[in-house]
Figure 1 (cartoon, rainbow, N blue to C red):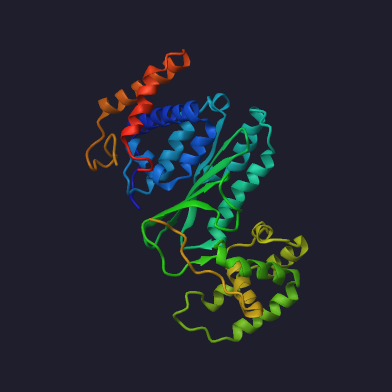
Figure 2: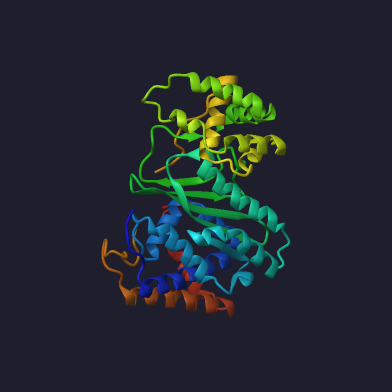
Length: 353
């Protein structure tokens, strides 16, 4: 984690370049391709470096997503590509931004389903996947077809590390079974409560079955857990399995009658501690152990914000923006030579690097 922020002169250039790169990809391959690129943690990292941000800075996520959002502002309908959310307070405005943009563009998809996807992606990475990183940034990108990608980031204040989570709707098998297209992390943890791992399927079903029995049954099993002498080395403390308001959460869950684990995550008030309690009780009652596997997986064009590996070269940066802008403008007029030349440059670089 690094302090500071991108200076105004750099961020304004980042917005222009990010907008042009987005426009070029959409023009060449369509808006769904931009979703695919953003959902690839390695491509995203390279993208942030091309924009002039530092590869190891936690700010690369928030700044690159913000640059894309600002870079396409006012051109979303023409591109068929939309961006919502952001850092902190901006992330909480994601639902209203999705609904507003969908209405303004008269999208032929159910905007409420996009809002649900945004909320579930955040709930999974804050509650179903408990890796010690608290979300503080959530960016939601979508197209006219209803396809979407999420780029969100969590912070571990004690370790001073950030972790970035990527989602891609066209390729995910579901919200609660290996949903990520990638997770970028500085280090992997040895013990992570991972309720979205494929091997956690029995544990997910057990939680649903447990809630169907009603609050009283859960309370009886929870009392048994409290009688256990948990070893000090266990990272879940006894007080963690008696979260404040747990009784209200149980009643709410029973009344909503969740049919699957996705429904469980949508129960209002059910946070990480409540879910840990349910998982432990379900394991005690049904013998269904959850997964403790950490799902995380482990180039500069214009320099870096902090001068690493070298300071941002403003004339070169401006030249790149100008070149891409002219290429796009001329391709729109039927003169595609420059855009084709930029495309040919890619043939000199190995695919996926």
